[in-house]
Image 1 (tube, rainbow, N blue to C red):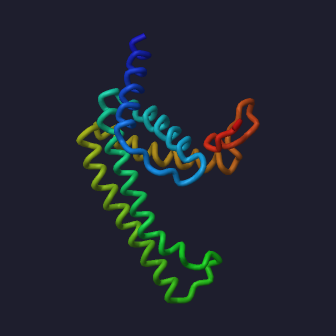
Image 2 (tube, rainbow, N blue to C red; image 1 turned 135 degrees about the horizontal axis):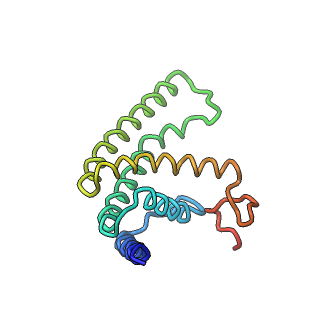
Image 3 (spheres, one colour; image 1 turned 120 degrees about the vertical axis):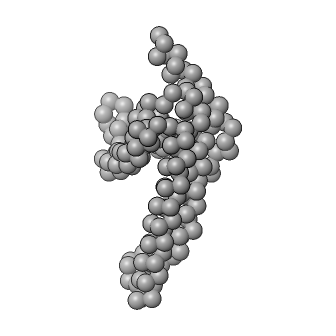
Length: 164
């Protein structure tokens, strides 16, 4: 009974912290469902207490927003290059430089936020966060490749808003 009350309190606090944050604009259909799956996945893997959830999610949301900004500003110019990979030497050099810039900025951001997360969570949970993010990406890719789970094992993508 105590676990159920703690879980309900955690969900309540999580919802309150999410309501206080302006939602990021969706990138495409189903993005909100993917984000909800990710929140549940990370919360479960980290076994966050209600107090930890209340402090963690606003910081994590800011981290995700900054990570998205880096992706858009550094990788966006690479996407402008030809899709078929038929680059000139100068275009290839530009793509390589932008890729390295992206990786460097992403690493700097990760270092910055690991320090922030460690102010909120014990190091064990911060380490679990890193692995949970990777596990979530792998799970999402696997489900996308397999058509994802559907009720009664029929496949499908949980973020595609089935039944509408």
